[in-house]
Length: 134
Image (cartoon, rainbow, N blue to C red):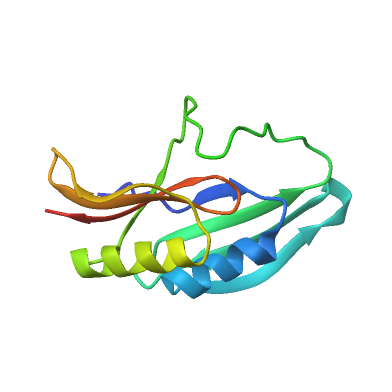
């Protein structure tokens, strides 16, 4: 019997290298080779986390992805939750990101559904939920 799992999540960005450095520096992601298709105006890189989870960072020169207010809420994908393994790591990484100039929208705090989390915006305004489940 086959098992369904999420293979990866893809994010549009104007700066693949900046985003890749962010996930490598703060979350330990391994940065894969760059893929480019000049005829379609498309570039991407896959990032792989120690758990096996992957992100695809994508850039386009032919499409016009809709920009939204940093940290804004819209229908569809609303945040990317990254489980850090301990409350201490959530606290420490939140403080590190705040000191580096990233916007911390909330937390760290305990939620009503049993998570310990903070919400931080990356440089493109995406909401990252740094979390530990109860």
